[in-house]
Length: 178
Image (tube, rainbow, N blue to C red; front, side):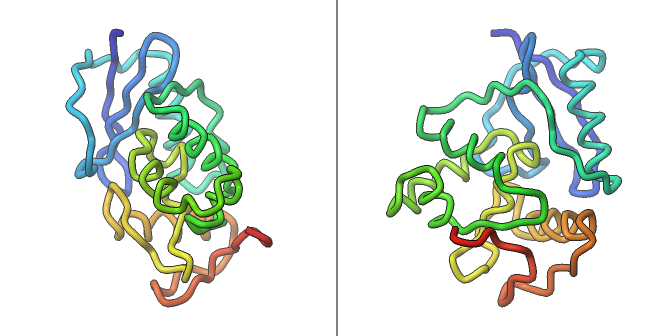
């Protein structure tokens, strides 16, 4: 499968966007843990990459974007289930790993959900940064915890809510019952 790529400058550092002929396949942060080495042709005019760049730029300028893009991340069926569920977490809302496991009908699979979450190849668009520890603490993020914190604070600004005040408390809205 032929891949195309472009780089987008962002407030959290350069983002490397990848697409095949018709869908976005990956977005990696500069220091993304577990990012594979991908062979791709630089292509600034690729329609999927251009649209992804446009929507990400809107997001970073404070627009409440819902990211309507064709997506084809490579992963196992379980990972695909987790990544699909991540897209259901609303902007500015956080869920715990246990909440996410319950949401997909796999109560008790928090670690497996965490592992799938960590392997999400579509940073920001598939919002794995919205998943936190049960206590509300910021846990690991492939782009680093400071990036996760920035993204959560940014989304609170977009929603018009209070800003993040630290790992010990969780001012972000959680979904009731999750």
